[in-house]
Length: 118
Image (cartoon, rainbow, N blue to C red; front, side, top):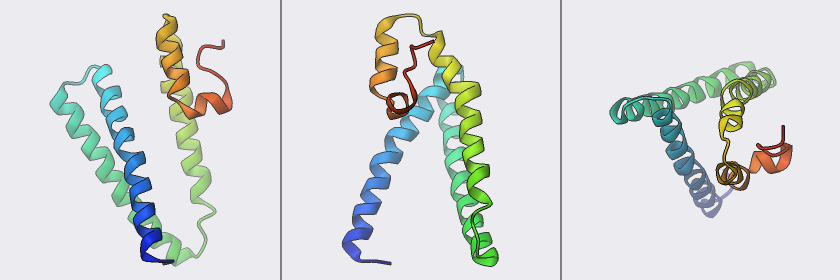
């Protein structure tokens, strides 16, 4: 714990990141063919599961006093999801405006290559 203002700033940063992230997740579920209610329920279940697993990881980290084993597992999961689900979906977009939106609104595309470069 550093200070109260740092805690407020961190909370605001997390909220400003997570709210658009959850909206995006909801959109992906809708585009995947789920109904609005089911997409909302699955999005909530995903967020709840992530929060529970985060708390489990904190307890395990305290017990083991080393979190070096969790990072490769988490990174591997994100790379798998990006490589198998999200990037191929971006390549299905045939119209230039859709590709440009993907490029402009994704910081990952600017760092690792654009979504419309084959």
